[in-house]
Length: 419
Image (tube, rainbow, N blue to C red; front, side):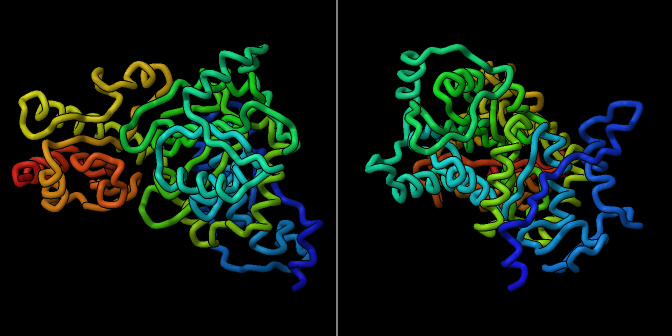
């Protein structure tokens, strides 16, 4: 194929926010960037971004904008990566799913020693599969515990450089105490946080890459780069897309690493083929226009529902525990005050028994009993049905954009029927 023969010399475009905004005589907010962060990247007469379905493009034609083959590059992909990158504060690389984004990073930097905190089961499986498949110089890849990380922290104190990331992709043969620190913050489904800056210090001391899965907090809630992260990951299926109608993932790389890491990720994505489809890419760009509107409302409504559930718990009515960092009783309350600018719209709560939890989920009339999170509809998930490491009394809630009173009415009637 002609497109295949061109790949070795193809230029991988790192999507940048539109230069148009640098000429504005005033600063614009994140919610404005959501609508205009891709202005000028593609010149058309359309107010809304057009949908492109072509897989190949006329060679050297001005209107092709340097595109050759859609696995390598498309204008819609450039646009959505420019918007997400500008909102998060780095360079974005999109993928066909959150899982493919996570695995792309580990395949790119080829870590030998990984710290992975508990969290999304799919990512844990992906990392474990990687460790089983890799064998570097007869040295098995290691997944480390927090206790082992603390030992490294205590034994390898060096000059700290948290103000600007010091990690650079190194030759795989270089001996380092730690190669990758992967943190899910907040954590799914207990919504616990970790002290990111503590791990940023550890990364600076050991030469590790610090990556943050910030899916549950979204760019509105947490700013990982401000706390020393090198890479931020989102399952864009969730809050970025927000309509439960597409699969996608994204890695955002700190701007100081774009010359090496972003370019390498783009090259490997072309080879691996883990790109979003044309329509899914367009849907994600469309969804980013309302990102702040949706997520702010979801987070505000979540606080109302959490407080209602807390009243049920206080009166001893079936609710035993609520996992949300807005509550002073939550183990991560102080970390949430320190790190989160907006408290998450996803939380979990526990009832008195497994039968009550299952009955509650089945009795919902307005909200859906379904997995996933981040969509405009409120979802309640009994996670124990597919992950038995999670308590059978726990229900995870992803708040949508419905009126809080209506969600409460549905929860109230479901709680009455929970036996």
